[in-house]
Length: 448
Image (cartoon, rainbow, N blue to C red; front, side, top):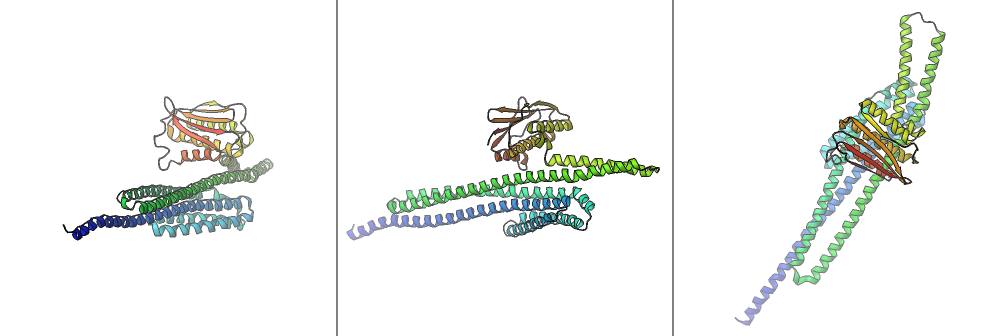
């Protein structure tokens, strides 16, 4: 073969792999850029949905803040509560309108859910506006009677459930987006590997570029993980703060009910008794009305006592955790006709207020679950202190927990118990008891 022809032939076989390698590099480059853009968009989606989750939590907190201020005004008559109520109302509807607008652009079906929530919020705030107007007009009794109805409570429960469902769906979308992001990262790494194998002729250049790209992506991955951990930590801190605020508001409301409403009811009963002793009523109908009034006041005192105990157990504040747990267990088992076995110490453990109420609420939730779902016949409650460790065990002989109880949608009780204990530095575990039933264990290191 002629040398020139052979040279052209050799050049062709030299250039073809080089051209193929360059084409592969260019193709891989565009593929990588496309995937990097997609990955960045996924990261932005994750951040946006985390912001939405935070705004949903702020929306619920703002509505609770407004309701607390409204009830404070109704109970105390102090006009200083009106401004926090107005601020909570403005924040609630501002957040709601912002969320609806954002969801309408990306998730119309969720926007419909938010629209329904807003409708219920309109009704709820209309009710609160009505009670505040009654108070301003001096109609204290009508305002107090209005807030005693369960209409507002039902609306707030529906609002809370819908918002919690929306938050759960957002968390699921975040989880799916993170999985997709990791998948895209693995695919990108594979593309980098394949490109390196088929471009050995450009090892130095391609290797340096690929190494730099991989390092950049790892740095981006590390930064994103740091941001995710930071946002997760913020959400946990916010949730713990909301729990503490809720307990403080319950405690404050319980004190106000006891001091203000309790005093009014007792004074009214005493005055009524004095009037009854000094008044002769020959009319049978009037006598019956006197008795109904006295019975209504007695029922009001009892209702006040039950509400205070639900808001903040007085035994926990006055006699300590052991007495409060004993009372709660006896009350629950009496309602459910369950056999109760107690193993409680005589000495009261030394706990701070947050740890005490956390343990009490967890035991309360556990006993309520036994009553509602376990179909048990007996319950064991034990509290043991060993050195710096405090252990509370609630065990029943019921049907036990499903294997996926902690992950099941709507299973908020176990998650809330676990979070309460984590918020005070403790732990909660749930396991099968022998031979049947469920054993829940609360563990707390004292002094944390």
